[in-house]
Image (cartoon, rainbow, N blue to C red; front, side, top):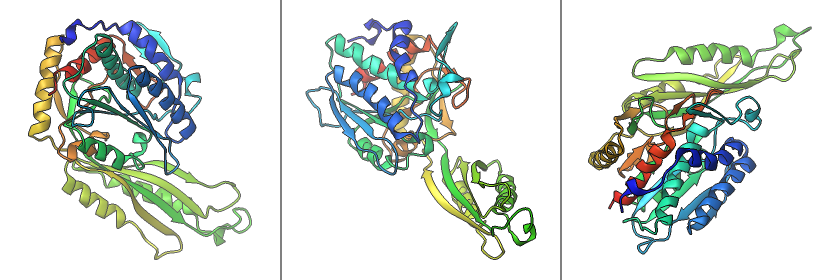
Length: 376
């Protein structure tokens, strides 16, 4: 069973990936995410997988768990863990249409991370068509909320990971084409300022603006950034009538650190910004957190296998820790051998320039097939 003998073709893979990209699936639109789960469920059912649809909660879409046929099904094996939600709202295709330009294919979510998920299913498809059985049973778990920190499915991912020997996370490859063997810690925070409403025309002095305080605090938050721990505010919502002094403003902040101790200090500093002593109240509450994932011997052994397979295909596979959390934070932090960012090459994720390099489709499908066939 030599994975190099499997007939991977980038053009054919792109044709299969296109319907996934055309199915827009932003995190906050559970119906859209569920439609994307339908497409993936069909692909996996065609492989003979046992399909389980897991209802969503907390206002998010549902998850999809599929177990491939195997004589040892139920025993520890390989977990393919990916998300099918994207940051792009429905309608993004109007400004970021699916299109091909030379070796690049564009579209919302094509890099993060529909491309990586799809090439792994293509690897399984070619293995099944060849009549081969992987040494270990394979489970696929697709979730709906990674782009907002995985608040509704972390337990599901962690429990499934504990049932397996290895976790593969096909997030986009790093800019140098490398993979990820560790990730920084990330914490999210909910911000809220509460002021006093008044008419902005004839009673301006009677009001206390929640927006004004949030703007002041935003600058304070971002000024806390150091080399060890970063802070940013990415979401602000307030106001409805311009002739009213705003009574409430809400926001969301994010902090990232390479070491858990630095993140813990950052969390303490953020929570200390809460203040109810003045006319306008400012509240900081903690949101979801991704733990630091530091590579251990198991992950590094998995990396060496992955690097060897990449070399046989004909490309280098550097590795390292990375910012930008993923669900690999959870499985790696549990001590389960995890290899992350083995998905497609490309650039522009989370922007209107998101694209993949088409020739990486066959390359990364071969890499996934090598892992499915070589891990024992």
